Image (cartoon, rainbow, N blue to C red):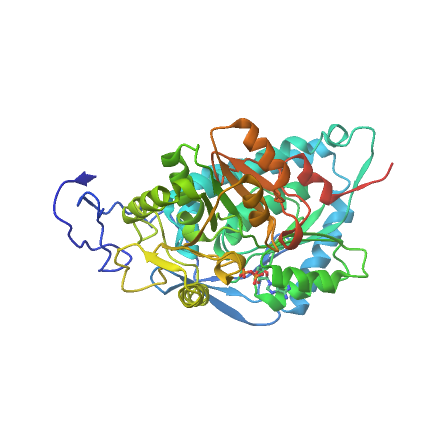
Amino acid sequence: MATAKKPVRKKTTAGKNTLRVSLQTGWTYDPAPESKSVARIDKRYELFINGKWEAPLSKKYFDTINPATEEKLSEVAEAGVADVDKAVTAAGQAYEKTWKKMPARERAKYIFRIARMIQEKARELAVIETLDGGKPIRESRDFDVPTAANHFFYYAGWADKLEYAFPNRKTEPLGVAGQIIPWNFPLLMAAWKIAPALATGNTVVLKPAETTPLTALKLAEIIREADLPPGVVNIITGAGATGASLVQHPGVSKIAFTGSTEIGKLIQQSTAGTSKKLTLELGGKAANIIFEDAPLDQAVEGVINGIFFNQGHVCCAGSRLYVQESVAKEVIRKLKDRMASLIVGDPLDKNTDIGAINSRQQLDTIRKYISIGKKEGAEFYESDCRLPGKGFFCKPTLFSQVAQSSRIAQEEIFGPVLAILTFRTDDEVIEKANNTPYGLSAGVWTDKGSKIFNMTKRIRAGVIWANTFNKFDPSSPFGGFKESGYGREGGLHGLLPYVKLIS
Ligand code: ADP
């Protein structure tokens, strides 16, 4: 509720010092925290292998914490080489004995059931996503969880229609898919990976990121309740070594990886010379391009959404803003005004725009890039908000007067840091936008349809949004060029990486 009174500091669950105030209006917002009571988090989680919870043979566990409070939420098993082998063996047996033989319409029923159960448990999943990952509850409640359910619905629909997806071709599944996901959209990435694999008749061993394992483990509970045949989906937790063992396991026929370009390259090396199919969804440095004829307020809101919401923890975040010179001053002023009204703080609060950075390590990386930007001579601006005393938080930050060659314009920061550059002509901005090792996404803001077509044809990015940003739908494919990886997830295209076309 907004009330017109002087800025005051309010207690919130994230820490005593969150200042809930719009600097433009002087209004304050009363805290509106989502209740944690719906979230059942066990003290300890084992590995989900062959339909059962199995203590790790490694005997090791690690903590997962709430990045907004630094409090421990639970401890989870760390799968060692023998555990990975157990999971891959279970998936291999389930593939041979059950899943590949099951009529496709029967497979579809299980996938539909998972989708419905995600919807039934949506509130709990959203709260756990926010507690474990730090993203605002609005984001996990309104985007992550419903979109995850939609992915299962969408691919359930394809399971018995593959002959229409690949007309005049016969398809066969590949076998066991090893899937490794990052921490920015934990449940959604699990859905992106598991749903098409199951629909096409493959079985799965999935490894969530070490800082955000909880919603994948909740998904394991759902999969168990949905009565999916044992071993069809196995969920194992651990860090990089667990992921590497999964990649190297000879029983795995397909690797699907979303994460950093650095690890993507390692995975490419370790699968080279094998028959494993590989899809990689890696880093990005999206250019958001505003032309002088664009609806500027709408564009500014799109830029804010593209880089600051979800703390910039999005591989397709619009982290480079190219503004046509004639409107640059106005756009930067509007951006600063809007940044002043962004609420940074308790991720469980429904008013919060920017939650916690996922880990201390990621916060350190972001801080390192902010100091690089300052040293490189760009003009620095951060919003004047106060951060909670505890937890990992970062003020929304922008750099203007950024040079094309500077590191903050070239390298992925994965935080709420925007680099602003200017341009005069279409050719100039296309050249600058394409001058990056990445090619995942881009945005174009203009009143002219012809300009949109010109830009989308010439910008080398897998996804280009026009007069909007960061919009997703299960039916539309997503993936990149160059160092952003290869292969597509989502849509009809997302089926292809999981099948062999045999005739
Ligand atoms: P980020 O920088 O986004 O954390 P990473 O690429 O480090 O991305 O991590 C993404 C996922 O890859 C995580 O689940 C992580 O545990 C896993 N991972 C890290 N190192 C390796 C590796 N060498 N082989 C396979 N998976 C790995």
